[in-house]
Length: 168
Image (tube, rainbow, N blue to C red; front, side, top):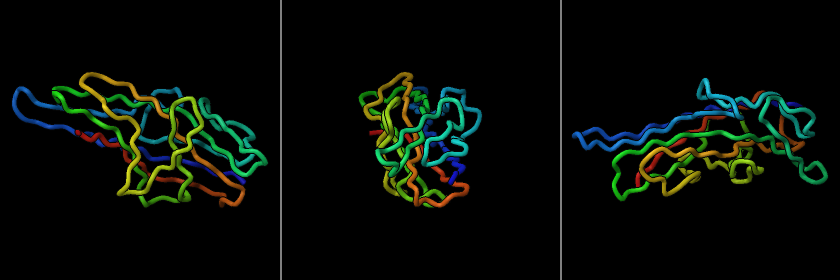
C-alpha cells in the first residue's frame, strides 16, 4: 500500500517591538530535503512500508528487521535569527496539531542524517528541537520522517506542524 504524505509546516515568528534596543527572534524554513523551501509544506510524496523507491530527491527509507515498519525521512533546515536578548536563550520547539489524517505516532524527528525516532507530540505538548540558541544567526538541521507499518491505511496523509521559538 502506498501513502501520499504531506506535512504542513507553520513557522511561528516571535518578535518584540519597542525602543531602539528592540529584541527580535525570527524563524525561517530554509530548505526541505536539500532543496530551497518554496512554501511552508514538506511533501514526502508516495511512500510505502517496503522502501521500494524514494519519492523525491533527499528522501531516504530505513526498514526495520522483518518489515515490521519503515521510516521515510529527510533533512529540513531552519534559520533562527536572534538579536539583543542579552543573557536570555531561545529554544526551538515543534508540535503536531490535532488536525490532519496522519496516524498518531507516525511523524518523527531526529538529528540530521539519522533515522528520526522521537514522536512529534500533539498540541499542547511540544518537542524541543534545539535549545540554548544565542544571539546571532543559527542554522538548525533536523531529520523529519514518517514511520509506516503494514497495518497503516493507504491514502493521502497530512498533518500540520507548528515550529515556535520560546525565550527562556
